[in-house]
Length: 508
Image (tube, rainbow, N blue to C red; front, side):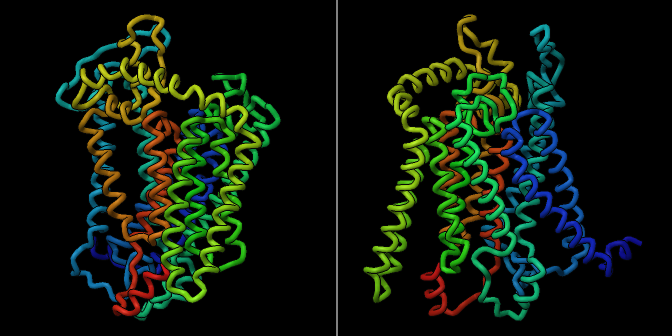
């Protein structure tokens, strides 16, 4: 009976395609919904994203059952036509497998922390209700918050792996075009689903950026002209759908390098692909217009690095052509125009308010450093397992020197807050997961690797002075880019002869 159940049937393929198409539709809807739903900061919007992610996870399990357990042959970009099942796994495959185990370990860490809670917090009476727990296991001092973050992390994990799996599937057009004949030299730099995702991000993100610019120029204090936030209702720290301008800057700084990466890969195709640099220029100006000091500095750093890398790579490639001087002039003018648009938009709409804030940069950093100093004893007191995921805001009150000590709900330093809430055990698991993402995505097309890597690095740098990873929509976009990078690195490419290999490297 089990053998009959596991046997491939004619109905498996249509069921798989139905699940795959449903996954794609849901992923694209989540991409649009996340930032537009006020940055997915209200709890109701977070739960909507969680429920959607649980559906994605269920669809992924069905697809994996058909593809892995039943071993139904289905066309995918991570399966080569001539692949030998007994061949040794590559470093990227080993890193992907290890990341899967690390994902389970992190989820188990959060689950045990919530289940084995040391206390629950009553916000009405403002007291901790302590209870017996196993001190040698992860435990939380605010069970309610840790449970909330566990369910959110579960949804984010399901979304991450579902996105990676969906991006590696072939569309119907690709199935007809790329035949399994062992000569798949025409593998696209970005497959059909990656291009679809790129355009959804570009159109939705650009519309969001334009709305945010108009909102700031009009002086409206309502998010998306709809919602009056409770925090900072005067509107000085708001930008677009985000009540905190730095979060808006973090979202846009993750997005615009990806648009440039897509254009850099596909620019020879011509047509509408040349709209992407215009969209990216608008989005790159948004962190400046938002008047976020950290966001503006990260934007400047990313722009400087991308310009240097772009000119270096293109100059090296152009030197091999007879019209190298003309090519270099073209690339130089493209860079100048892009930077000019970013500077013009950012300067006109944001520099007047940003300039005095930049002059107070040292004061802002000194205030943050004092807050970090107040919080570091928490990490020293609970070094192994931390105080529990999501519980920083409630536990910090116990470490206030007086009632005059600022009591933040987020520490404005996600690296230190993660160490405080996860301890060295959870913190090490997260660092290992980041390393696995780098290794698994290392063989992605070079230009995508550069732009996606810089986008992720910029967010990690900004996290040293702010809290991007406390905002659901920013975590979702960060994980989406990581999944995209891993999927691009997992694409199986044909083994070419050495002369052809060299020409291919020059092309990509």
